Every structure is written in structure tokens, then in C-alpha cells.
Length: 158
Image (tube, rainbow, N blue to C red; front, side, top):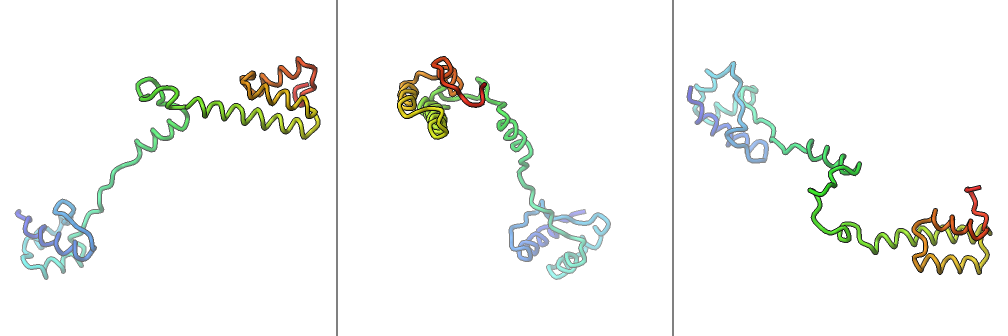
């Protein structure tokens, strides 16, 4: 049964009705009413069949994001970061300056808290501030260990 003309007419009518382009592949014809559709030769006949629901436009097929979302969730957990994925040096991916800023800011924050709560006096604060600036400490834990060795009571570690 040749329905190409009916599909073409239906596509034109549905495009106008829906306000978006409807191609021939999006035109759906109910299998139970193929005889009525094949006998329709004018636009008016096709319009009636559309109103009856024998001819419809299929929804637009979108691009599935399921795989992309799954991969993004894995990346958030830290997966998919092996050698095959990397393009760029270690410094380009996480610059030395960023690492330094993260370290020094956290150390300075702790030093300020210790000065404010009275753990460090002004001169000791200055001393450890300069040492931190000079890259003497790898981390806050390393800095606190050195303070303990110098005889300073560090809160929360007794």
C-alpha cells in the first residue's frame, strides 16, 4: 500500500499545526486505519484523519545523556583520571601556584586562630608565620608537630 503522498501531506499539515518542522519519518499512521488513510487524497481529508487521531506526529528523538551523566558521576568520584585520559603536564592540570596557595592559606588561617585564642604570642606567631612563608612546613599537621617539639601546647592534640 503506497502511503508516501499521504505522509507528505500529513507532514506539511502537522508542521503548520505544531509550529515546528515535521519530517516524513515522524509521521505515524495507525495500522488499523490504513484503508481510510490510503483513500485520503486531499489535504482536507488528511486534516480530518489527524483530528480523529489516525495520523500523529511522533515526538522528536533527543540525544540520550544517560552515558554522559554516568561518566560525569564517576569523574566526580575521582575515576577516569588515568594516564590515557590526561593531556597536559601535572603542572598544567594542578598548578604549583594553586598547590602553594592552598597550603599557605590553610597554614596562615590556623596561625591566626592560634594567635587569637592565645596559644601563640605575637613574637611566636611572627616566627611561625615566617617559617610557613619560607615553605618549612608541608602541612598543618607538620607545622603543629614542630610547635609541639618547641614546647607549645597545641589544642585538640593532647
